[in-house]
Image (cartoon, rainbow, N blue to C red; front, side):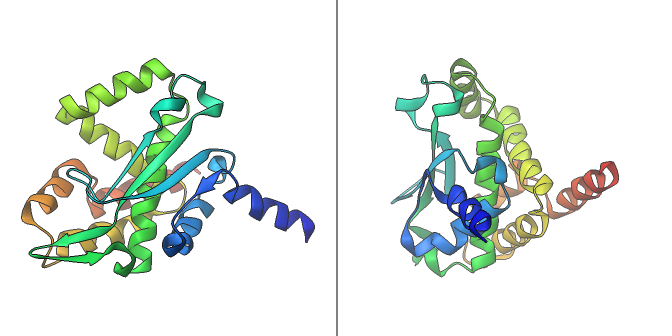
Length: 194
């Protein structure tokens, strides 16, 4: 019993997150035991350009070494739905867990990169559409390999089928992220390897 409690506490030490999203953050983190020791801050932002969530290393920790780096996952306070907004906490639980799992996939992708590789990654991410697409695919692949395929698909379907999300945002998701069919294909491939 004591060992289970220690493991539970390990998962969430080094993590900061809004109380209103603690259930979703904790559930998403439970799929990623490799991140139990990783410092991650989940922070609300009023607006994130072209995104609802965004994972990145904290700049002040970028040159401290891979093991001591801190990451932040920015989360929009509100989801823009046409002319109205919806508090992010009102998005269905599974959808938020899937969104967060995708961002944790980015953190997994960053773990073994040096500081200079991270700087190059950031520059390529904002200047190259093919690099951006590959980065988003890799984040999804990490989430899929950690057992989050169903959550990723539910999140994609929520976005692509939501009547009030902008067509521009849906087109971006459609262009740069794995489709539900591609998620299933990767999941099947991973299952056949394991």
